[in-house]
Image 1 (spheres, rainbow, N blue to C red):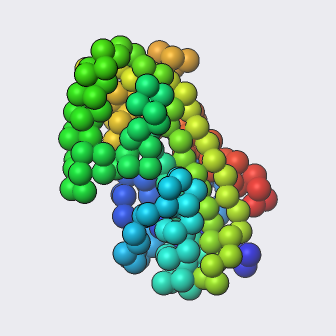
Image 2 (spheres, one colour; image 1 turned 90 degrees about the vertical axis):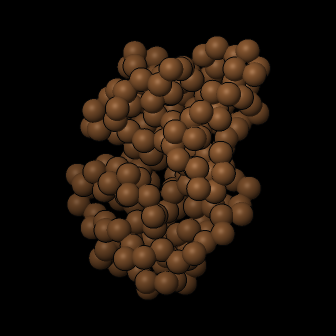
Amino acid sequence: MKSGPILVATTNAHKAAEIAAILAPTGLEVRPAPFMPHVVEDGDTFRANAILKACAAAAAHGLPALADDSGLAVDILGGEPGIHSARYAGERASDADNNALLIERLEALGAREPSAAFVCHLVIALPDGSLVAEAEGRVEGLIRWPARGAGGFGYDPLFFHPPSGCSLAELDPAAKNAISHRGRALRALTARLS
């Protein structure tokens, strides 16, 4: 792979900022894609959806593109919301909508503090569609409600990380990035690139 910028293939500003912050010490030149082509995320795994996004962005811009697909997998729900994490409560659902639906489904099962994991699969693709590198990261925890913390995004206020003794939303960004699924995947990816 030639030296030069790697585009971050996402429309999620929170995700793009996390990726840039985690990769900052590596010296890789990472920048947000100027635009994301429409991608139908119809893969049945995090990996498949990450490949779709990375290849679409790389082809559209003529530069290497890094994409992630990530989400929350709750054991008692058979891995839900999984690849549907961002759209769990519908296509235009907010984080609050998705969190409310998750709590509703867990309460219907009588679940209290069920085990869960955040999973992230990352891919870097070239404009010709070839894959340069990929990696996966995960972090284990529990779902606790009511929500706690004002940081993070998505399901972070509900995701309790036992080693930290708090929700991911209660951690400052650097502490979260040190333990998060995305942080782990990005560190594994950069190790492979180097």
